[in-house]
Amino acid sequence: MSVGDKTVRSLDMPVSPEAVDASSTALERAAPFRMEYASAPESTSIISIAPQYGLFINGVMTDGASARRPVVNPATEEVLCHTTDATSADVEKAVAAAESAFGKWRRLAPSERAKYIFRLARILQERSREFAVLETVNGGKPIRESRDVDIPLSAAHFFYYAGWADKLEWAFPNRRVEPVGVVGQIIPWNFPLMMLAWKIAPALAAGNTVVLKPAETTPLTALLFAEVCQQAGLPDGVVNILTGAGGTGRAIVEHPEIRKIAFTGSTEVGKGIARALAGSDRRLTLELGGKAANIVFADAPLDQAVEGVINGIYFNQGHVCCAGSRLLLQESVAENFLGRLRRRMEMLRVGDPLDKNTDVGAINSKVQLERIEELVEAGKAEGAELFQPVCPLPGKGYWFAPSLFTGVSTSHRIAREEIFGPVLSVLTFRTPADAVAKANNTAYGLSAGVWTDKGSRVLWMAQRLRAGVVWANTYNKFDPASPFGGYRESGYGREGGWHGLLPYVELSD
Ligand code: NAP
Ligand code: MG
Image 1 (cartoon, rainbow, N blue to C red):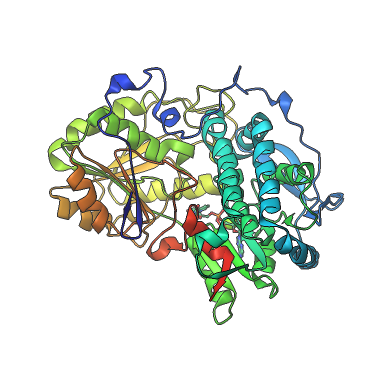
Image 2 (cartoon, rainbow, N blue to C red):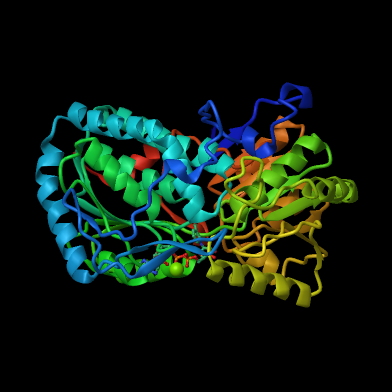
C-alpha cells in the first residue's frame, strides 16, 4: 500500500495468537522468505575460510600476499583470516576493468543479462547454508536470522531484479533507457550480503557494472560472492569487489570515472561523500541512520505489539538502520505494556550466534560495543532508568545485554542519537497528534511502526509520520518489491522495487 511517496506495510489484521505457531518467535515470524533445512546449519564444517584474501578484479581473485587486515569473529575474538586493503591503484584497476566490461554488458540482450542475474540468485540459494554460517561467524548475528532472513532475502533481491532486466522499456514507457556506467557501491557491516544484493542486483539489471567495497569488519560473504560470480560465468569485470577500510571507500568516491555512488552507512560519512560529489554530475544515493519511533496505542493487540517491539529493537542486536529504537507508548497502557515487555525480555537468549535457539548474538565489533557502552552511560548520567534482564554473557567476545531505558525525555542523547545496539528508549504520549509530534522530533526519518486496532488511525498516522517506511502492526518486514529509504538525515534515494531502478538508469526522450 502506498500513501503519498511512502511505503506502508501491514500484516493482515487481526492475527490471533493461535494463528501463529506457538513455538516460533517473533524474529522467525518476521522472516518473509523461509527456506527449510533438513537440519539446522549450526556447524562451521560446511564453510572454508582461506588464511588470506586478495581482491576480486576483472573476474580474478588476486593472491592476497599483502593481506594485513585481520577479520575477527566477534563472538570469540578469534582471527578468522586477513584481507587486503585496496589502494587507489587497485581502485584504478577495478574501475578500468568495470569500464571495459561495461561496453559489452550494456549491449548484451537484456534477456541474457537477466539469465546471469537469475543464475546468481540460484547459486545463492544453492549455497545458502554456507553463506548463512559464514555471515554469522563473521558478523555475530544469530544463525536463525542469517538463515531465515539475510540469505533468502539476498537471493530474493537478485530474483526480483533479474525480472526487471528485460522490462526496462516497460518500466519507463516512452523514454530511452540507458545504464549510468560504472557504479561505486559502499556498504556497511550490519547486513553484509543483503546490502550487497540491494546494491548489485538493480545495478546489473539496468546494465551497469560495479565496484563494491564491503565493510572492513564483514568482508567474507562479499568475497564468497566473488566466487559465485565466477561460478555463474558472469563476464569478467562486471562485478569487482575491493576490501578495505575508509581509505578504500574514499578512493572509490573520488574516482572521476565512477558515474554513481551508492552508500549505506553512517550519516557522518554520508555527509562527507555528499560534499565530495557536490558540484559534479556524478550521482549519489545515501541510506544513512535512523531513530525510528515504534508507536503503541492503547487499543493495539498488546501481546502482538510486545513481539513487534522486541523484534523491532533486538533483531540483529539492534544493528539495524530502521530499528524501532524509540518506543512511544500511549500513557494509559504504558505500565501494563512495560510489565509485559520486561517479562518477554527475560526470555531472550543471548549467546552463541551459531546456536539456532539464540535470539541476540554478538555485537559486531569492539568499536561498536564501545559506542553502545558510551551512549548507555550517557543515558544513565542524564537520569534515565536502565533495565536489563539477568543474562550471563560469554567471557570472550563482544556482548551487550538487551536493554530498556524508561524515564527518557526527548532531549536525552539516547532519545536523539542512533545507538545501533540492543537498547530501547521508552517515551509516552497522550493523543495521536502528540505521538506524531514526538515521532517526528528527530533529525532522521527512515522508518516507523504503528500498533493499533483501527485501520483509519494507521492511515492517519502514516500520512503524518516523516518516515520512508511505515509498518502497521508489524515491524522489520522487508520485500524486494517494496522501496526503502529515508527522509532528512536518513538520506535520499530508494532501494527496492521499481524505485530502486531509478538511480541506475539514464532516461531521455
Ligand atoms: P561507516 O564508517 O559509515 O561505514 C559504512 C561504509 O563506509 C563502510 O564500508 C566503511 O568502511 C565506509 N567508509 C568509512 N569511511 C569512509 C569514507 N570516508 N569514504 C567512503 N567510505 C567510507 O559506519 P561505521 O563506522 O561502520 O558505523 C558507525 C555508525 O554508523 C554506527 O554506529 C551506526 O550508527 C551507523 N551505521 C548505519 C548503518 C545503516 O545501515 N544506515 C550501517 C552501519 C552503521 P569501514 O568499514 O572501514 O568503516
Ligand atoms: Mg567506519
